[in-house]
Image 1 (cartoon, one colour):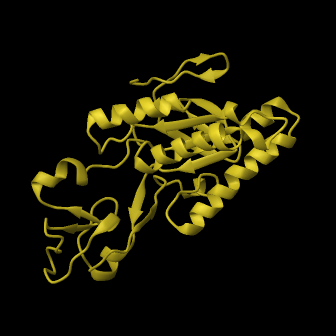
Image 2 (cartoon, helix red, strand yellow):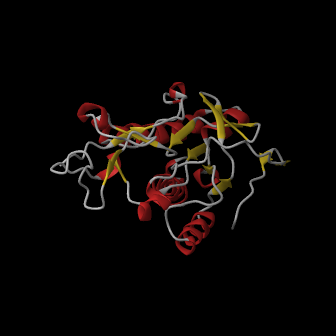
Length: 238
């Protein structure tokens, strides 16, 4: 049984990883948690309004399950857990932006569940940007819809690439390097071996609708957004 997992993929822009870490391991979790809390602490000491705003802006790229959970968790942290710990900032005014290149969040879920999650995030104060691929990540923020969004915390939840298991074993793989398997998880070339988890994709036609399609639409053309009161105006399906 092969279950070798996956890591983040940056659509050919691996240079973004230092600025937009992903969430896959326990070390990733503790590192991201530390960066989030440190950003609040730096905002508490920052006197410049623009720099403080950037420190209180949290951008999550990718509207799948990981991105949705991250956005909700940060919103709850800012609104419920941290307000009493600071004197000079109101953590409830933190800006949490969830960016998704597709037409809705949670594309692998049914539309009613995705709509429920969308509404729940909006109630938490999360801004949801749909149909907006990111074109750059840096230490100063992200480039989205031909505009720069200043942010000191960027988290990547947009795409993954499977481990090199297919290369190790000489097995056929898809565009994300996932081993192609039959519905019983056996590999077509080696029926005695099975694979599961993030490192596989089904090869039978009835599974192709979701499992073999690209997981993100960030490669599509950018769509423009208007600006209002100095903030990006997102097109949403709320």
